[in-house]
Length: 162
View (tube, rainbow, N blue to C red):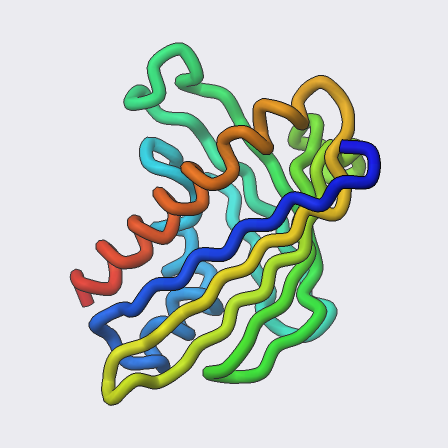
């Protein structure tokens, strides 16, 4: 991905108030329940949603993912901007292994905007890949849209349960 930029934007309207959608993005116990694509859990979820707060999540592939079962996909990042009920901006990096100091092979910046729509919430999620290198990067980029859409679907399902 020499000088390319990979971007993905997902817009959803949830039948839930902004404060609940915000809480789902900022309360690590709730986020841990929906983060990652279908078939993935998060046995490790550190999510400090404040400016300069740190992120460290280890996603674990479940049996639903067949041959990938048991694989761990760690990521780390930092919050750059937190505007309550309005916006989150954070960096993220997919790590080579669960060692927090290992190299990132993909890095991105994610912006999540929240808008009240008469008791519903419009969420606009924008991911901009700023680095993609090494043998794992092409597969991760290829699955990015599907993975993020599944993740947002899981968020929507969880919000309906509240």
